Image (cartoon, rainbow, N blue to C red):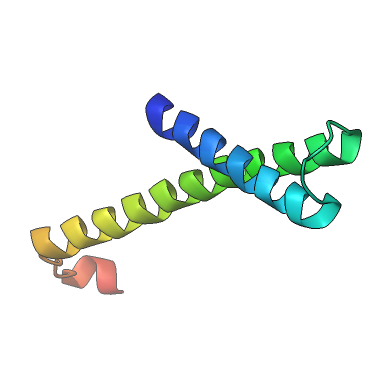
Length: 81
């Protein structure tokens, strides 16, 4: 997971640099707004990967639950009343 989050930060930072270059023009100067856009891209990259793992884990858990197919217990007369 550490390697994945590192890559997410790297690609998110790259996306932030591209975004900053599109907004402020290239070459990008190291101003506060540019750095804020780069950090925003890094945070969004890490959040996106975290969400992907959460949704993927939920789908995998649901699939295992369906495939395992635990039988439903029948309620006896004492619990129905």
